[in-house]
Length: 469
Image (cartoon, rainbow, N blue to C red; front, side, top):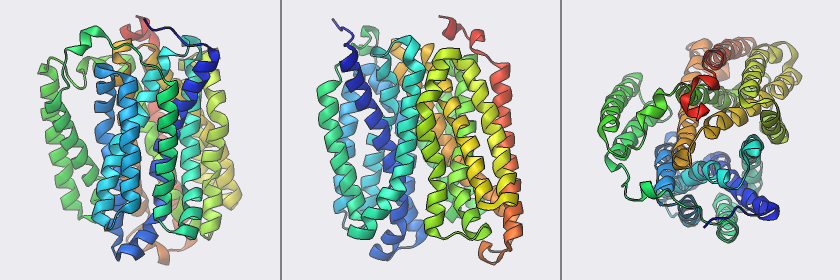
């Protein structure tokens, strides 16, 4: 019989789960600053070393739903511990990689582990946190993710500058090993729904979803090094495998993604909004440095300081955002977050153009808490309506929608920025033209966030039978 732990034990469990979210986001961001060093060390091209990032991001996107589903089937704690073990072993392989190919392989395995670190904490926390504190827990997870994003480039820069690129992966190995020991000691097992034990994972669906996401990843993020025709062909193939995947899911006895969840007004809309809001989140990270460098003339150190403002504000505002969701309700908080995010994106489109670096920082300070309000509240809206047997799956779907948005933001919004710049190379473009292209791009991105706001207004939690249950 499972007994909910006391307050002190709950705090330790929440600490371990928050550490998992921190480690997963650190795995994404710490490698970004290693790419130039990898080009020099392995005498490789930029498209080749980009796969150190792409391998991790695509693998997480592919594996995150399956990780959540396996948690529902065989136990959330068990899958999390296995994922942590994989993450540690893969980080060690990356640190010792003799070739770039081995490093990319290590990042693939690391991504499988990272998927469990992103998917399982959201589902595990429900067993140890009261319903009234779910929003606060989601806010804490958002804070840890933001801290990992902010800490990665600065920590990686110090480590790589003083000890070489392998030091970044050695630190990931050590942090992962420490978290593995801690999590194994403090996180108790949660009973698995007996009706699910006889069910086997939907491996056919998993294979088709994997193919769909890999093709989509190659056609968007990975397709940037290819011709437009090649990228279009990959996206058409991704659409074809997606159709097959949906057909298999509609007939499978234990589908990987039950289509009923996507048809539910609450769940389907919340997942779509999660995808839409993730697009500007990634666009600010990808497009921002180009504008700060070529439009405002900052050096690398200056860019790093300005870019750190967003994650720093996110780290400060994450827990208060969750508490607000607990206090006034997830739907109201989600609406407030989307309104603030839309206004922040409009500010980011215009403030830097007229106020320079100060305007950029002001816009980030306005924009980032809006992200945190939305993320905490939107996760709470979905998870509060989930049964124990569905929590792993739904947390996996949240991660999947987020990563699809990140991939789309990195590719399509970069394409919008490039189109706004015109055919000339950015290094030879006048700062005023770069600023104009930046404004056009973020007006488009603000329109995407406005669409999410309209969806949130039209489909409210009370309309969902799942939520009412």
